[in-house]
Image 1: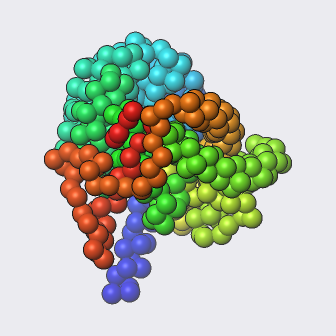
Image 2: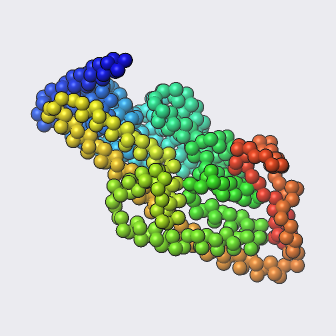
Image 3: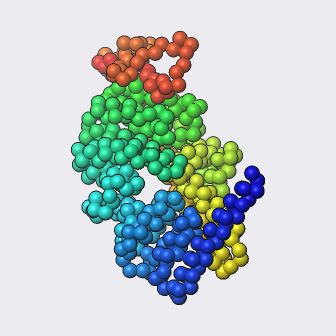
Length: 474
């Protein structure tokens, strides 16, 4: 058996060597031009040397004329599907426009989307990506996002519904990572429907849409906060608090979102529970004020050292911690983020290509392949590091904004509290909880928790507090 494995490995090595020899012959023919680069790319992709092929694709897009080969489009699609979109998002629009490869058209549409050129983005999405192409589900999510931003909510919901269907039907193809991406894309489209209904003030419909998102979803922990906001706008404050208290679960200890405390304090304030409101505000300051200053110093110290931020995220994934609780929480949240995991996993998969290339006999082509692979992987590592750095800066700004929000809430409490002192109908009853204050839909059940616990009850908690505002009872 061992001899068979060794023999098989030897045969595979010979096949790879043959393909790289062919690629080398085309490189020599090129004589400094990119004329034969499609042949080079074809032979590298044949052996799944995706990262090693990236420099040739990029140079072809930079120096070549418009690419009109369906075979080349297919090769580029395969490379992008395996290395991720980030490697090509750094390319300018003029380069990406030269190719008809659906994956590059999707990336081009994303670049237009980020610069608010929505009509151009829609043109790229609808005109060049076939309905049966693997990138279509992702294109439909982007399409739905564009319609939502431009307040065309009916069109957005239609796009999201098609996205859900396409994500599920396409899920039978591709590797494990691809299937995970499609599942996440489907879930974002489910949430997209809810967001569209929320934006147009259809809170009851949004509430039902949010309930369609499975609690086993990768994105459910972050979306629970949106559900809480929707309940807040429905004036169902007890359910808002119930959803937010779920974040106290050890299961969700990795979630970083300072706005959770803002919404919690606002909800208590709407119930005129002044002491509870101020306690949330004071606790937030106490827990984060010093750590926030330390994170600022940390970010200034390491600047744009992308390698450092990559290594930092890697150490967090191995269970190591820094001395700053706020920084730890932000990093734990980042390393659980689907975008980060896709980039990180792709980088480590790409490193496996070194093993394939190292088995080749010594040649100039081997050295070139190793150099190209190193270049592509260094960019991928830096993209991961840049993403971590960007998210940390964003997290720092979120905390700073939350401090401002908490200050305004504290002032508002003082104003409302003063006003309530002069109200003749103010309630002095401090009873905490009554089942008659509960509201629920047909999809929500009452569970009395007589010593039992169901995992799928996570996120469905509800408080039963009575409003202490004058003349109100919830």
